[in-house]
Length: 335
Image (cartoon, rainbow, N blue to C red):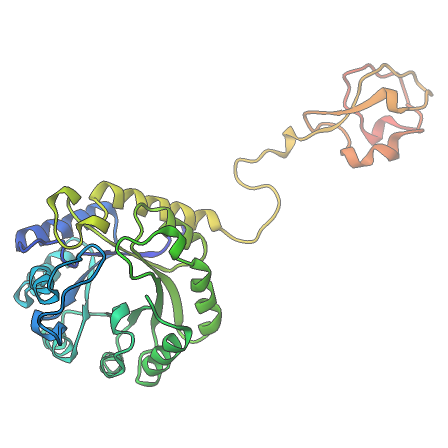
């Protein structure tokens, strides 16, 4: 059975400062059918150059960037219990390191089997090189990136040892309108990097599951979506995160979409009955030796008579005995 894309529940800041809530998010992701949970590994001070910079617009407008990151931070001491709980629930845990110190920490802990590069870090070539040198699979989000920037990031990743790369189409708006997603670009990336140990997917910040399902139908192998226990609980990411029931429905719909893609095959499939097709039937009595005309025959169900496209083979032929209306017309009835 086709299972569909690898589905990642992005936990990010949805813990709202509580380890217990973070563990509950892991449970929610597992119960919803996710394949993996992802954290973000950084410290507030490492994220900003200007400690007084104020976010100008979007969901965090008016907040000092440093204060936002302090609120959203996942303490590094939480990583091990979250990762352990995720594995116990059958999920693959991994993280996005945002700088070299975060990567070194994750490598020391030995917890990550793969890494993700965030959209805003796709231009950080030194970080990409260091992550690639681990030799572990990498997922790279491409929000805001030009095609040249994507190519540069991909080449650095490949040249420094990574042979399992997934490029995620992403729109770095929170939330993002569906009209801004441009899934056609995901297919362009698939074409450009095909045959080079590279697959494509979607990091989705739209509301609802429609875009994720569409991406699945267009070949996405990874779907990433933010998860929260309840948007009403608030938090930095609440306004563009899915609740557990919504996430579960998205997983189900993506699996269904992947199954529906199927293969390029034609002809009757399971549950289809060719016997219910139309065929040729007598609608008028005919005597032995009488020639068959259009008045004697029409197409009707079921398919017990000659195929409809054989009508011209019957017209003008003589009946070999008497036949009543309501009889399926076959070649054996013709002289």
